[in-house]
Image (cartoon, rainbow, N blue to C red):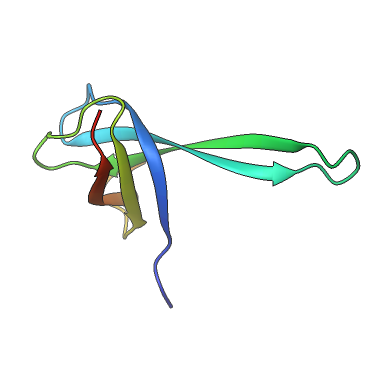
Length: 80
């Protein structure tokens, strides 16, 4: 089974070896047909502490690294 991958923006890098990534997902309202943006926050592994706030990155689901960290960074898509 393939692992989930998604693209998001770094919003916090104050933790050691961890960044917080926000992923926006547009969904359509069932009744009113309006496009809404749903957001999810994920903690991703950054072992070298190289990513800054505002960077757009690709993350992949992995086995649990810590209590809340279940994603790892695959690549940098856009640097701020």
